[in-house]
Length: 470
Image: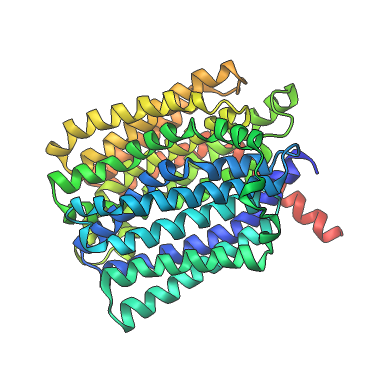
């Protein structure tokens, strides 16, 4: 299968699961904001955020190694999954032993049991799905994603609306959905056939996988600092209510994250093919030009209709979250582009280099949070996040050229970014005729990206014609 065909097929398959599942979850936001208080939503988000911090430490980011080496034809898949499950289990036992320490965080103390259950379900779900996509079972990956979402939605409606369990029901719904989806893949997909006795694990395979995954721990933590430390600072400085409003603001930029996340999930399965060759360089460069233009258009569109989306999605006191959205949309865009350049390092198995860029972003994020949150609250946190992702992107753009140059039009990229910033300022300040000013800037972006749009349209027409002939 050719590079483009393989990438396109995987994007389509993952889109079926991800877009459907994320769309349903996205449409549930009005329900969540109607039945949960801003305080409860803020506490739940702190639990999710804390698990995202601890997971890479206690799992040693082994799911990343599982995906990468499941793609490697020179590594036996039984070894890959068994090593992954063994490390995940050891990490879970260590976390259980240390779980009393969670009680020292006042807002999390009443929810220690839910915290542990969420950690277990989340980490094993990620591990199993990483292996599933790595061995080429993308349809099963898609099916599991859909099942996880359906179970989450149904259990949320039952627990929150029928039994009125509040935050406990909200957390249990996530736990149930992850555990059930994991069982569907592991048992229904018969992946237990890939399990071997832990005593038969080969030392050389463990070392190889650990050399890949261990350097990603500080990188992942640094990403977490850039993405999530602001929520802790907001909760400490402004309270959990403000953190709840800020957290729900993430739901609209998540549209952009979903679109790019689908691409990146498929891209990681194609990025390793013939890595380093001239053909691969051209492939990377072409894909980047297309994905950059596409993500800019989507980001601009979201910023344009931000207030209308907020009025539909955010109930009651959550509506004020709209003001944080434009800045976060640009931040998410920069994050996505930074992840693309990060695939150069993961494909080359030089994961240790990722840390330097992520660490630079994390340091800048903390410094800017300390300066901006006391002055601007949630908006200051959003700006700090944007700046930290910009630092990471610029670092990786420059440094990755030492491994494999990706050709890009810098002037074009800068112009698009400045136009997006202009839309962001106009929307956030909420000046008179802000929508029409944003619309004008949006149309300029469309004009700049006209070649991409026209090429995409021509390819779609040609594809339809070929199918009709067939």
